[in-house]
Image (cartoon, rainbow, N blue to C red):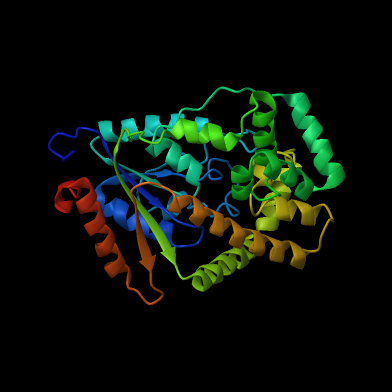
Length: 328
């Protein structure tokens, strides 16, 4: 289908592992392309969780509108279906004002659910079963809980770290209530031949693994220096439970364990660095299976202007229009 007959709205997407450099590039692209940014990050929705989520603060957004940031309290169990609904509304709103919607983020399922219109089943909740699984994890450890998931749903287990207890329990709960693995239901929701409701351009950023890991470790050092421990301490004093979805995120569960006296400071930082490296690997694995994604490899000494031009050329080719058209 060519651009003359395809009347689907345009949607620009930028994904990549944590610390690869999405934020700086997204600002430059948004300014050039008359775009508004929609955060595709599952943690940046939470208010007062700024340092551990590497949230770009309003004064640093260079006048570019940013959406789906600071929209709920940390005790709210924000979900992918909720994100999909809100993000779809934002895309429509941005288009109605003659601007380009631009999703930027690293939560693969969240981004892909919007790009391809996943259909989520309303499976519901079994609180008694959840309590049973929490008790099992408390007695036997999170690794044992993760192993239970690996037996019934190895595909989902491979995408989840054993410390991501909330999502591990949810996957077990889905199987308990339906008899079908979560991965199978997600595959059915995608549909092998499902067409996107948008004219998509999905850019994926990647770089040398050693350089990415160096950036991750530097970012975590910067977070600690910026006051991550104090940020987590304040949230706990507010009464946000450590079992909350938000507090199970990277950068929060490790500091919670440190503040609870379960490990010392150096161990917490080292575990955070290790788990963030593992998370980046899982992000890359997820993005590699996304359809129509255009990879851009960032070289260590590459100039930002060269990278910007390369990506603009990809956008022009994907949207089948002169790039100057969306500058205006």
